[in-house]
Length: 68
Length: 174
Image (cartoon, rainbow over all chains, first blue to last red; front, top):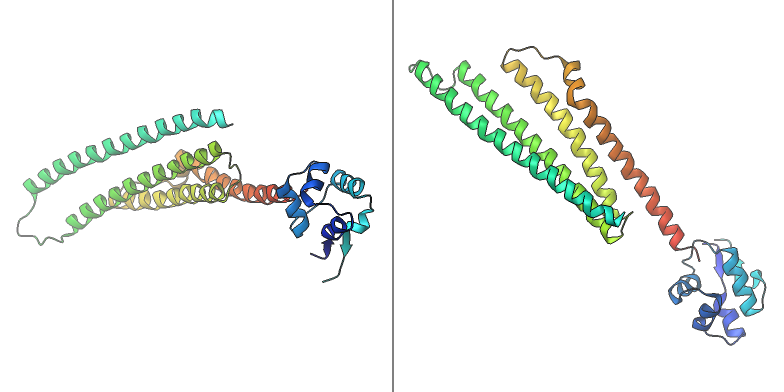
């Protein structure tokens, strides 16, 4: 998939664990790992909004387009 | 749906058992008739004739075709048993599982195969009995139900396949 999820980088920058983020935004750790591994087919605007709020960042900081 | 699955399984078991018992009683009946016919034939048969006389061949082909018809009826009952497997999957909560897709297609296959083969066998039976065989009358009787039902199950299988893809996509939407 040409859309890359850079959640790991943002988590390191904010010094936050993925489990903590999952708890804040209200998703399961299993879903968080799907999101981090890039297996997710889609991200809801509400989830993206919650992630941006929790990490104090822009959607572009989390998602990146790299052509195959 | 899960609650209804038990009721539906109960009804399916009832249908399966009753149709199996009807089939067994028909086979039993056929055996008795066959025995009587053999007795009659033995009384009137010309002993000097070879075993493979034309009369014998017709008689045997009649039995073979009748056995074939019983086999296909059994196969149809076997097809019905797939409903139980589908209901079991539903009970587990796996509505759009690969198994259900496979079972729907198998039921569709069995319904269509049964119809086509029984039609061919009835045509052959009509030939051996020298009776008239009206293709459209045969189609009108029970086949009008089974061919569309078979196709419907095929289509249902495809719909379930698409539903499974959608379900997977939905699961992977965070």
